[in-house]
Length: 122
Image: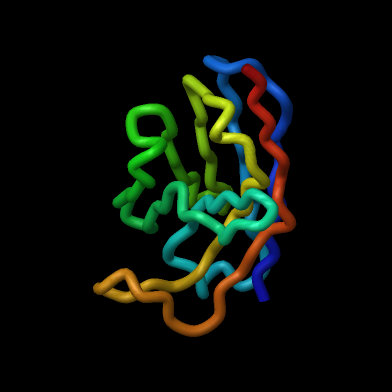
């Protein structure tokens, strides 16, 4: 099993910044990609950013140019630097980990963190 623990959420004004962290432990060899999703109550989770072990990244169009995902493989930790935050970024942000193939399809088990709240005020 893999355990994911998130931290770094909080409340900021529009235009501010936050950095989220997600530390993974357990069967780390089962992971080759980590990601951040966000969810507003009543909505489905949205993929915000994903990073592969080799460093390839993907971002939602709504956060391109504002958010940066990075990973420290030695620490088994992924980060999400969020700049120029907007009220519409308000959500619970969840860390995710799994194994993806060449076509970016998840294979086998995947894992979710408990979530951390991000609130951006006008």
